[in-house]
Image 1 (tube, rainbow, N blue to C red):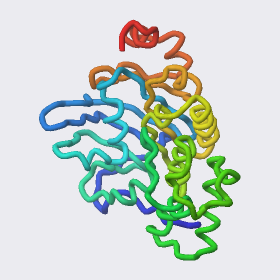
Image 2 (image 1 turned 120 degrees about the vertical axis):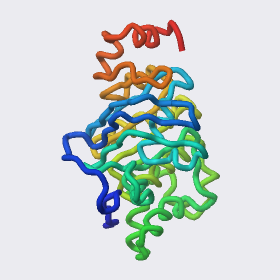
Image 3 (image 1 turned 180 degrees about the vertical axis):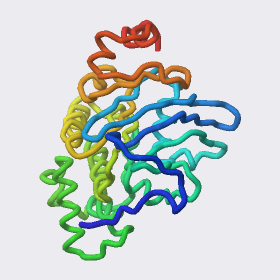
Image 4 (image 1 turned 135 degrees about the vertical axis):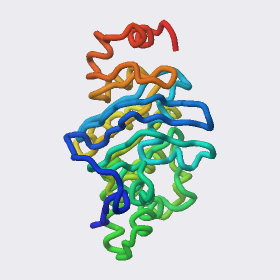
Length: 269
């Protein structure tokens, strides 16, 4: 499949030279009305890596995650200042094509949210929306994405059955397959295993480890063990501020900030 991925911004948008980062926030603040929920965050995400965003509830990590593909635009009263750079262009610039942006930066939510459609149609929906019409090409995309999420053998004989008949863990893997179907470059995951049982959680974590070979992945998690297992980098948020960002092994064994150490150690949060 070849789905075109044009620049996310309109002509004349702010640009800067690209770098090793797949995505970078620069002095990013996010507001709900007058309340500043995220405060002047600078944070970049490398290709081929997983970054975990951790912190207590209400610290701004999910708000920050949603900003990375402009999902906060759907929330009344939400606004942002600062920049988010993708391929040297600011996706916060006026005129950004958010449909193309969300094709390039996919999102997987906390609770599985399959469409009220068949397993096949869940995966085929995105490519079809972006212009793929060939049945053979759609078949190839569906099989490829289901194989990549370890769902093909479990579903190949019931592709036309409702996705809602799948277990919770299978539904979440289907949602990841659906995100992969439009060939994103970056995957955002908002606590993708928090609603799942331990066996399904383990499968999601294994999948994340495999997918990072191809994608830049940013994951929000409250599970410290999960962050330690799946991420290369960890960013600790507290009260809307980015307190510390470093290699995951450093964050969990020798953090620079006392607040980080207190949170990791369970002294608050």
